[in-house]
Amino acid sequence: RPRQHSELASSLRSFDDESPPPQAVQAAIDAVAVRQPATLRDAADAYALRPGLERYYSPVYPHLSTEDHQQALQRLAALAQAAARREAAHVQAPPPAPPLAPCHPCFRPLRLLAAWPPLLRLVRALALHA
Image (tube, helix red, strand yellow):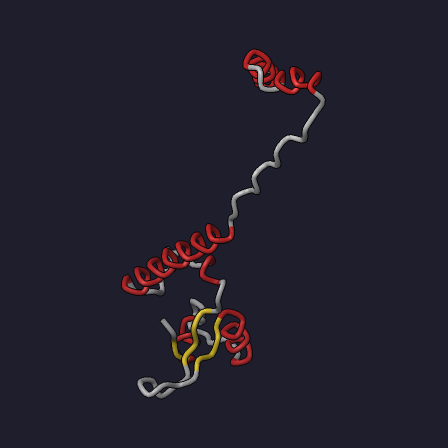
């Protein structure tokens, strides 16, 4: 969910409770978040995670509530499903093979030799044991 600047800044505090310089806080926030303008419900601007950075989410991050972890995991699952659907939509079947070109009647037995079952078994055996 989008967070306010103060929430993000407080999560950047170190273990000894020293606040980093304001420029460092803003640079860190700008690197991972996109600013969203204030709405009627929220009086302050909020920051949302930049698109594409969801893959860096770690479920062992201790500063999120259980509800936030569940929402993040649901969002990741939805994004993975959407990516799979997009990927499946772009996959196209290969074009059908063109028909064989006509050949002289005396070469017809040679052409049929390529589909002769004993020859196919021999080629398979050679390929498996090569």
